[in-house]
Image (cartoon, rainbow, N blue to C red; front, side, top):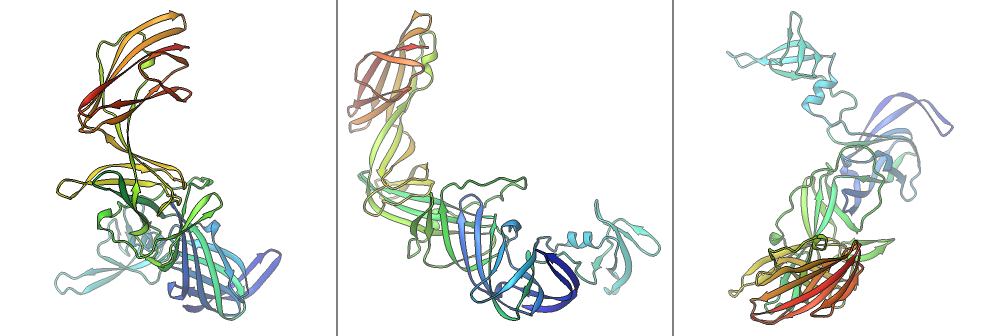
Length: 473
């Protein structure tokens, strides 16, 4: 922390006039942090809360808080006293124009600088004064006897212009009592987000799985956080969108297989209509870092397999299709989020499923996206098409009974090449007002515009479903 005298100023705020009083400049860096806490949301948003202890002079002080997030939202920032500390905030601002060679050029337009160019013979620098005229489409310099459109060497500056910072800085003008002061700074920032990733390992008999959940946490805020208390919020917040830049690009996460489990899983609690996950161990996040943290571990979760054959918009055809349609049903793995090591809200994320081959090696067998899942709900993972089960759909007949009434006859043949019997759930969309007038197996009307059949297909065998549907439009 450093302190220096500033100029005289007059500030009017809330009816109070601060007349020509010398305001002192005080700078606070991350070395003054006593603690920091992060609440990270999944939608490129984080709440930062940090405690700093800063030596402040009595009276007006211009406090520059360094090492804040580069994407800090100034309208959300709040600086308040902690403990017995007392001060009044008069004004605050966020200075985010960072020091770069180009910015240094731009800020010195119209000013005199020193151009250094080496002597080819001796290697010593020759010094020559020049004025920067423009930097829009290249640099234009005016020397005593000429104007040049390129920098003929290096440029030396006398000082850093006002308003240009080497790090993002949140500045506050305050009136405080002197001495060591405990300050609490909080703000919202973009550039930080998290998501859940899961690894599911099927048992050799396919009747259970082990589930490991991981948090992939990305920090693109422009600053680092050491030993931060970490909380994650699962759920979609309603946010007011204002015009501005799009969200930052997220880095590709590290491979899950390379991660190592943390010794302790986070505690979970409900927060209004969201869920909060609190990690007991503090974590450090450097800028531009992606980190994986253990979320949950659950073993021997009972699962069941389901094969689903879904139809299309075939009901609107007005003639018989002579060509049969071949289709493979989807292979689903289902388990209940209750009991044992589960029974907790599962944040949404991608579940990657592995199964062991005959040699005992784990093989990737599919992935699906898990939506936010409350406890006691069923998790359904679609692993792709079932290779050994084939369906052949054929339209048998079509007739128009009245102007707005048609009947369509269908046959679905299911063939199973597996060495065990399977049950296939056949889901057929139905338009308008529909009625099954004939069928080879009873159907279930699980939705207003869908019929469902459960067809048992023997091992290395086949089964046929036939039905006639009447539609009134």
